[in-house]
Image (cartoon, rainbow, N blue to C red; front, side, top):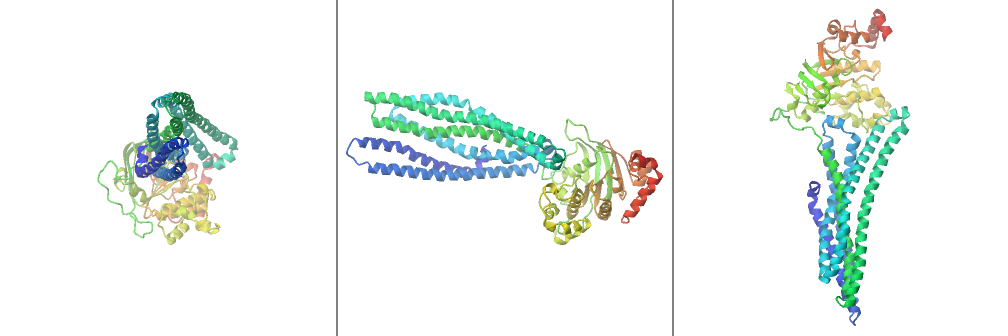
Length: 612
């Protein structure tokens, strides 16, 4: 907690100082009232004392108002700093950590939990300090007036204060569970909005609403429980003062009657007793806020302990690797294609899960196109995740440009790679913002060129605001094929030295797929291109094909070589009418040739047609 408080300790000290001055003016008021009562029995003027009382009230209120503003402003600064730190850390989490944690719960820690820091890191600190000092000062003044009445007052306060201390842990537990429930609400909403069409198409609105409402009900239940215990604590303050007042009034009245103290002393003591409400309330408030804040701090610390990616050179080499000669997004410098190699790589996502890769080895010289094929679950997409260092290998090495990826600074490694994911995500915002997401300094001519190459120019022309058109949440205003073309254009605009395409054309029609295959083939003359595809028509242009099965590399070769030599690849090719194709020449693919090839194969393989 002090870590969040420390950078703002100067402002907090100023607010505390102003608050203490306001409290000091309040302490003078009972003394002025005693003097006023003493003068009521004589002929002395009371105008001066009334003016003094009024001035004390106005001055104290003004100073405390300034102090309150300083503290509230500082509290907002604490929340802002905590959010900045947490956001920066969460966006650098390892992919595995994000996959193990619900995104909605992480979001609630940034939004809801950090808000609770507002009170605990400023108000509670100042309330505890100023309340404690004021409490001591008030007790001293009361003791100077009459130690007997002070003993009565402290006896009641200690008795009820002991009961209040038992309530505080209950407030902390209830608050933490309420915050966890708020995180569950965020998770449920994120799940529903993340698949909104699926929810509607499945008629699942009521079921999803029930799930969110159940989480909201849980948050309400624990919030009410926290409020209940806080109300008990607050009521105890009033009870302590009221009981003390009755006890002091009875015993003090008897002492006035016996002549032990004067009436003015009893009046001043009662005023001090009522004034004691404020510091005691502050102490109880500080304790309550501490319990609430500690629950929030615990959840924030949990998020901060999640493992993040290293941004500097990796553990294998303490010396910084020379920066690669990657072309800037707005530059025209030639790029040198990367070579990629896997050396006996083993990998599993977690220690309690089975291995995905079992000694994977292959070499990909650059430039050129290499395709990865195989049944689902063979580990093809994981190859890309290990190259990008989304995950760290369990064993073996992944080499990029002849260097282990763990020795590359992450920013430099990823700056040289263009990556098109399987689901081709498009972010909320304009089409231009999506294109520039990976290359923010790209020029207008470069954007126009990549739009033509990715077959997006016609799409942009028919959009109402062109590149400035808002594409909706996750690109909801674009078709699946358009989203894939946006993702491909975004990767090409980056001018990578290594291009990773994971099922990048799976949602395109035949014409656009063939056109983009030509673009990829053209790019592969200068850049190393790795392609994952289930549709073998996408990879017949590849210079080499890596066949994977059950986390191992079973064969490497060209399409024609693998059809003849590898039974698994031959089966995959036969089911897609490619068993007898030798693969078109790079740059000469056409819709007609593809159709005739498929027709010839179909005619010679009636059994395959029937099974398809």
